[in-house]
Amino acid sequence: MFGTERMIHALNACPDAEPMDVLKNIRGAVDGFVLDAEQFDDVTMLCLEYKGNVSRRG
Image (cartoon, rainbow, N blue to C red; front, side, top):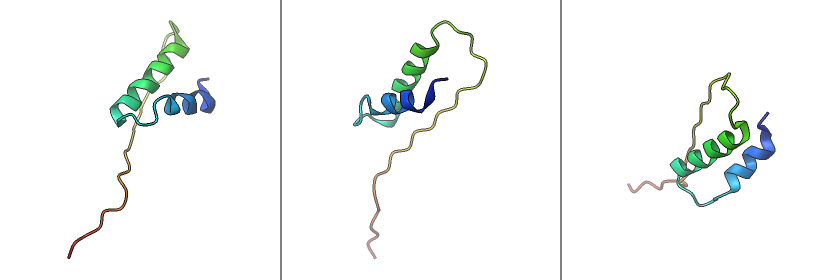
């Protein structure tokens, strides 16, 4: 299995990356891990960018 440790390493590879680049980094790490093995399950990824609290002006 790809596992949590590999996932954390892929997530920390470029900590300032934009969400789309984070997803590309993770997909690259997964592809490098599986190499030529046939995909037997779905891959779904979601990356959120937290921009902090939004103050409302009244």
